Image (cartoon, rainbow, N blue to C red):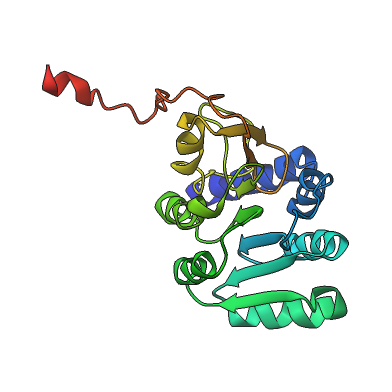
Length: 220
């Protein structure tokens, strides 16, 4: 009985996702970067953790504005398959095989500015937050980030459990420098943010209700 229920639930979820999903990650990336331009005196830099349809979109935008793309992926077979399928379209993409944290640290050490970062590697809230924190000093005014498997707190009708954004999204919401927007019908439900040139847009006292632990009461 349990197996039958699980099977029925899985089929229902597949049907829901096929009907609810309205945009793939590549389409959303193209939309978010439609107005991207090359900064003065340097090449734009795009970074992603986890390769796939997003890699083609980033390569396309980079070719249009003269930018560079780093794709961090731990699966060597996935890289080889994507390279074979992409051919000349992905010729300018720098694939970095191995642990994303190690590779992002190398990118941050090599470049002063990152203009766009997609976080879509391990299904772990902690890992995704650590990835962001490695690049955070390089994400200046106007930089954009996109997190797959993510949602705003309390959101419903989502395409996945949204594990990757469980810590990073509240972190961005609490920052005075990031403007956050949900895309529940893209990818596996996604959240984007843009680094505000003015700042002081968000509520720095924000706490996700799901994580509030009443710690202040212990000190009163």
